[in-house]
Length: 365
Length: 242
Image (cartoon, rainbow over all chains, first blue to last red; front, side, top):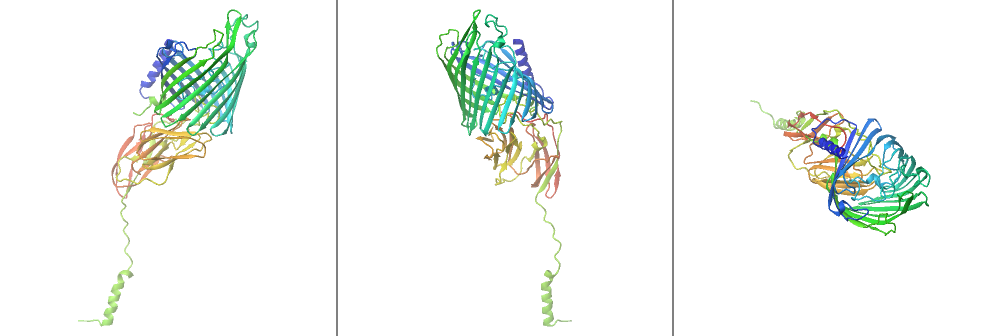
């Protein structure tokens, strides 16, 4: 992994310092570079990084698209991050998305490959130049299943339907799911400019095929489903904008009654001047924590916490954004010793810079 | 020695007095114009790919989730202007306009005289938030819906890069110039700068992605100076904005 990361960094550096070349048409190659500094509690379940010591980390995201035929786009995206300020130790390279998209009209777009999930909208805003804060809602983890998706917009309505290979789960709360096809649908309405209401749902297996039959109460892992229903709201007026999402999930648990829970967040942002904005996000997570325990039993309980993040963003240049944020969470004590439940605080600073690789390669001489 | 009788003399005097008005007026010599003209052709010298993939790596669902096809006529993004021209022109009273249409700024490049007020109407079904952080003019118009327009006056010359907070791939340039002697080529590449005072000037061929191309020209009153430009554009497509 370290070699891959080194290669990726070298490739990007080579592109940045490469002599000007003749760029080809019909190609898009862009990216974002993030540098972050974190100071957190040492024991927090959700927020601890680098054992509580100040830690820095760097992240690069690159995405490219080519249009070999009109309305047919091939695309790919990768992200690499390293540094002691990461939530997990070490370095990592993710190939997040790749596939092909056919867009014959606004009302019909066909996409196949590795893609964002249909349920939830935060995944479309997680990149640093779209996320007004530094952290992300815990209940809306980034999942990139394989699948085939059709989507479109017509008048005030938008829709999307897909068959995807993975559920929308969080690795800290449920096991890493195996691939299995599941349907997912989403609809939205934009009654007036600046307000959009959306709903989405999915149903399918969420467990891992490696789990022992004894753990699965003698049944196959595909018998245990996750059913997820979600709603979202986007609001924008003047210098103010807001996002809110709510998801209700019900999980089949081996040998036990099914368990359900809710997660929601609300986020607001206000832009004071061209360079300065402030943002706040509040999250409530009452979501199932379901993990195998021992040879034949399961822990199935709720993770019960509230967290909030507040921050400011200062646009240093059109492509460079500096963010400062503070985040705190409060967990309700849980008698289950295995469930995450330690409260904590985190301070973070992030500088992000977007760039166009083709433009860099052909910049003014 | 002959002599005229008084009535005849009076008649002759009267006739002579009428003579200037009775004769046809001599042909008028046209006044020499005080200004000249510069015209020429603009050629973009590299093969252009004006279309970038219709793609956003992440997009909110709903209207505006997909970018428009970027069909840009790059020749219209070239501006020709005189670098140093005499006089201090008054700020124009007429407004210029840069529309947000189909999630693009139209025109992509707008040359204006210093002091001009530019309107930014929103013609899209989604909100836009026009802003600029350029030193020549910093502004943020906030979010506003279809049918609304906000205005900005540009009092300092320079390059003003314009973006939209909401749609990161929207960008445009307002080129604020010190004098009114500028032109935007037609799609054929032909341009003309009218009413230029006589003198020797540097004409700048400007495009946002290249170092300005400069050529000198001598303008003679009443004549047209010919000056062609070759704009060596290195790549196609629109800029990624933030």
